[in-house]
Length: 283
Ligand code: 13P
Ligand code: ZN
Ligand code: NA
Image (cartoon, rainbow, N blue to C red; front, top):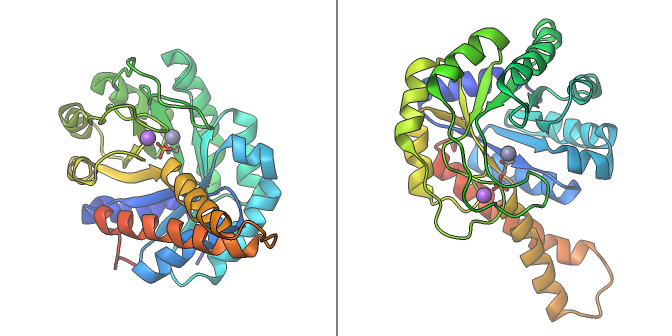
């Protein structure tokens, strides 16, 4: 069933677990993530970055995910990940996305407030949840490697003011994670997360989770995280499965054949994270 992230995240918050949000790149990613969700009886969020939208277009992605979601036996939401402008967020809502993120974390606080509030003003009457970001997650969303150093944490005082002024319905926080592949072992500042949790009552979102040890993620969920984003690990899994087949069958030219082990590898990664997030058997 095709749903918004609203109930999904409020249920997760009430039940002290988190819903996985998995970045999908193409049909095979969609099929593999949905298969894992059905197998685990877990709610799930499919999400796409502006980079993937540039590659395939909002209409293609929306149509594909809607068909998959409507046929699924578990709740499925389609979320715009790292929405980069007011226009793109509104376009995503019009194209059928059931949830959007507006990422103003790269502009000054007041500009982030204004940008986020402009999106919530449109989304609220449509009942579409809006995730915003305050503080910085390291690395780049689309393809980029994690950046060493610089990882400003979300300020709890600012977070309280930000949510009150923007009326965003969930908040992505900077607590030490980074997009892409980590050079060392990442460290989530659980104390910062607890401080933010103490000031806010909306669901909190963890970005850059590929490469974060499961025990740290589980602790972050205990400290208030309700949505956990994974992108890089799915890309790695698909490529590993696909390339594994091709290296053993170099003469193959049917893309369906290497895609099968690619999808199996994605489904395995997704299932294992659903168990750790606590969303398995919640649908
Ligand atoms: P990773 O690629 O590190 O999993 O980050 C995913 C993410 O935050 C998508 O918004
Ligand atoms: Zn992210
Ligand atoms: Na990461």
